[in-house]
Amino acid sequence: MAAKSRSATSARAKKTNPSVSRTGFAEGTSNGKLMNVGFIGLGHMGAGMAANVLKAGHRVTVFNRTPAKAEALIAQGATLATTIAEASHGDAVVTMLANDEAVEDVVLRRDGVIANLPSGGLHVSSSTISVALSERLTDAHTRKSQRFVAAPVFGRPDVAAAGRLFIVAGGDAAAIKAAAPLLDAIGQSAFVISEMPKAANLVKLSGNFLSASVIEALGEALALVGKAGIDKRRYVECLTSTLFDAPIFKTYGALIADGRFSPAGFAAPLGQKDIRLVLAAAEDLRVPMPVASLLRDRFLNLLAHGGEGLDWSAIGWLPATDAGTAAFSTL
Image 1 (spheres, rainbow, N blue to C red):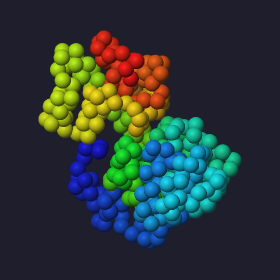
Image 2 (cartoon, one colour; image 1 turned 45 degrees about the vertical axis):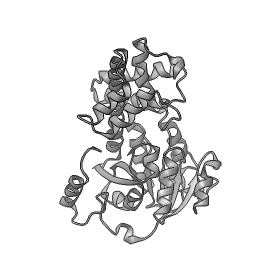
Image 3 (cartoon, one colour; image 1 turned 90 degrees about the horizontal axis):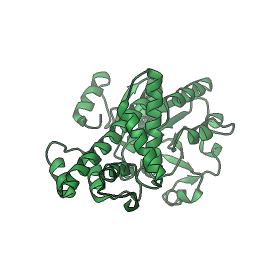
Image 4 (cartoon, rainbow, N blue to C red; image 1 turned 135 degrees about the horizontal axis):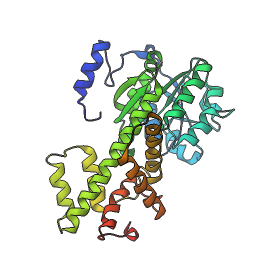
C-alpha cells in the first residue's frame, strides 16, 4: 500500500469526501479544537510519534513504565503521568506498545485505559497486535460507550520521528473522524481499511509478513552473489537503481550487505512475534502460508543463537551462514 502515490490516495478519498487533508480525512475535524491526549508507550517508535502530536499543538500527557524515557518530551512541554489512569482522563489516549501482553495490561487492567477513559473518549491503538486482541478491545470499548480506532503504522523510528509514517486505520466513521487530527500529526498518509478495527491489524500483520519475506529474499540473493565474489554493496546499488527502486529494498539491502544489525530499529523478537501472529490469523482463516512458516523458523534460529538484541533484518544474514560464508559470531 505504501507504494501507492499520494495523488491516487487523495483521489480515492475525494470520492467519498470533497474536502480532504493530507491523510485523506476531512478538514476541520473536531471543530479545529486541540485535544487533551494521553500517550502511553515511549519506545523507539512511540517517542517520535508523541513528539509530533505535541508539535501539532495538542496537550499531551505521557506515561511510560520507565519514566526516564519521558524526559525529552517533558522538556518539550508534555506532562508526565505517574499512572495509566492519569494519562487516560482526556479526550483521547494513544497506545504504542510492544505486544499483546503489554496492551492487555495497560488497556484492560482494572485501573487501565478503559476503566478511566470517559464515555465518548477515544483510544487509538498503534501497536501491532493480534486480530483476536483487537476484537476484544473493540468489544470492551463498545461496552463503555468509548470510541476505538486501530491505527498501526508502517515505518522505522527515523520515519516516526519525522512524522512520515504510513497509517492503516480501522474503526467506525465517527471514531475515524475524531482520530483524524492525531493521525495527521503522526503520519504522511493514512489508509482507512474498514469500519472493523481488527481489519487494520490484519493488514499491518500481512505487511510485516511481506517485509520479512523481502528481508529473507534479499539475504538469499546476497548470499548467492557474495559467495561468487561479487561486491554486495555494488549489487544492492545495482538492484535498487533499476527494478527494485523502493525504500524497503534500499534500507534492508544496505543493512544486510553491511552486516549492520545494531542498534535495532525493530528488534528481532518483535519480528518473531509478528510472524507468529500472522500464522495464528492464517490458521483461524484456514489460509496456508508456507513462507510465513519458513520465516518463523528463521526468527527462532536467530533468537536461539543470541540474536534478541539485533534488528529483525538480521534474519537476512542467515542465508550466508547456511552457505558457509558467514558465522553467527560475526553478528
